[in-house]
Image: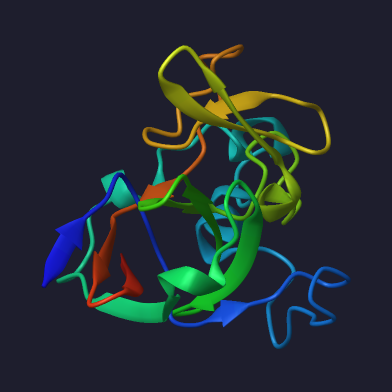
Length: 164
């Protein structure tokens, strides 16, 4: 049985360092989407469109982990198809996948962000400059020039899958 959820991503789940004793392994310093953006000025790098909005070849669903491995309101970093993705579960079945790269600084830190809400909008606050983004759309609620990349996500037979 397939259940579609708000947004999502990933090939396999990798625990954050210190949380479950694990670490992020074999992951480049900059996500590919951000590396391409970095070719322009540093000021423009965080202002590029979300990864899911760019033209791309046929997308593929990647099985990441069982839904039960994602703790409520806690981020996990995953390497999916060469991209660093931050996964968040909010409540029993809502799962979101966003770029792990902070749009303002390009640092891969979003899985360490603070999960919250503004009204009915689930949000993530960057752990660096506290910019707040919608987990569903990537919209920066305080600065319309910034946007966090988002990825489609679903839960199939209890497993989280992300489309890249």
